[in-house]
Image (cartoon, rainbow, N blue to C red):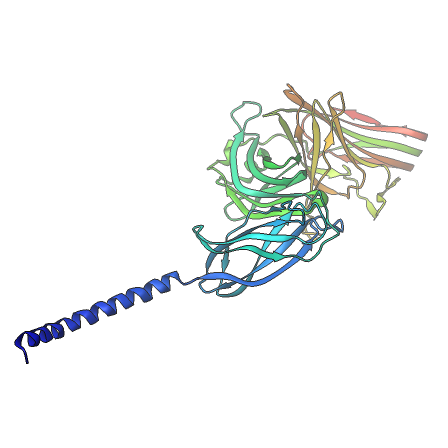
Length: 471
């Protein structure tokens, strides 16, 4: 063999292990790169759609499109898209949320509002992203829905954005907070009446205070206000921070739009930072004898300071009807009647009215407290917003309140350049008297302000030892 060729062969043999090692390294890098680029989630071509009636009026408020994905690696993913009608008008999608998807075939829902035309809708620009926002899959022309005809062209929709702010509110500048205020940002897609209710909770989930806000909101980013009364905070003896929880955002007919069980943690307040307002505890009497009808009226009048253009007032532990004399109650869809020794109270009138002077509008939120051993649940509702007349007086009224112990919140927007709003609350019941009677009026929960209790003879003859009391 030629010595030169022999030397070359020996060199090649010496280099062969190095070449093989380099090839293996390149192959390993290629395989690793392929593993990294492998799609961890992708669309699988499955789609369904359905109409959804949010407010129970029998018409579809939104279209829900379920998008099928195949998940190879579990993780946090989000899907977004655009939905158009046959004329190219776009519907409004609820902001997509990141969802944890486990391995396998999954369906993820997209919710769209604002249908202006009947028929089918076209899902386009469907984008699938990972937790960091990287696009993993995309379909430009994704899906055509079923045809929909029974649609609501002006639905309600809003959701909580998760942004909150809290502060103590000292309305009389005495160094103590009358309220713990919490602002909650709300994204409103469609205008309407919206109500926000929430609780202030201790660190061990004990309910401390309750608050409610209700207003007509226009589309956009809006703020709703919860003013938690300082009295139950002070009386609880529990220091903060507190949890804003059991937060419900509702629309018309109290249809739920958003729920947050634990929404926010407040600052580090001391319960001693808040004031405990005095309240009346006791009873008054209307006594006498006679035959005929009396109209019983209980009137409570107070003045509420205005802060940032709004007013808020709490009545805690008031009784409806405000009577401590033992009775038997008969309830029906027409109201509640009461049998008391010597007196019969028919179902009508059974009015609870609130009047706000110096206001733009008025809302009344009522929370009926549970009765231990009878019912262990709490009922909450709010009146429709009452607009003020040309004189700046707004009135809200109900005649179907069931008997019980109530926490009432009275709130709204004050008039221009108004520093205080005057609140007048009135409870009325008719008494049919037959002989001697001794009616005890329960003043528990009444504020230490001006109130009056009056009994007016409508007909018949009476000998009244006491017909009216004023404080």
